[in-house]
Length: 197
Image 1 (cartoon, rainbow, N blue to C red):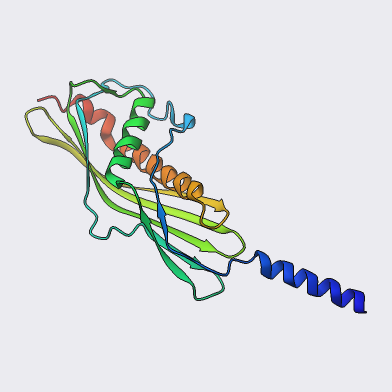
Image 2: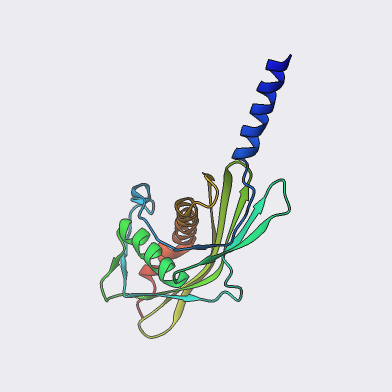
């Protein structure tokens, strides 16, 4: 009986030792990594030239997200330590370049507004991660006419160790790729051919 009690106590201590007992604020450097699986997502292109990509951070709330503990009243903010607009620019241009879009100095200008960007991290022994992003995209002709506009959302998810910068980056990049694909499927390809004046 004493041996069984000892085993139960040891198992309980190990369980407690693995559970996260603190939730501290985090600052995440946004770093885009190209996913080879994105290549070919847009299919064939009749027109493939964009003169310039411009990204503006239009968010009123600059907090990136929140970390919460599943079983304790612990909570902390997550912030971005690098420029979200630069990250969106790199991610969108990389995704489109992978799919045959040429940023050559000819064609319409692609303007993107970062409307929202948020993350949640739910922690217990490990953590689940989720990210959401909303973008408004416009194509503007060389003459200055806005000839196409759409608002899209993207989502990403992940699971792993609590407070992992890599897990945050992978989740955010997945959300950005998802939003860029949604933008591309919302008439972007056709608009490239009709936005030259």
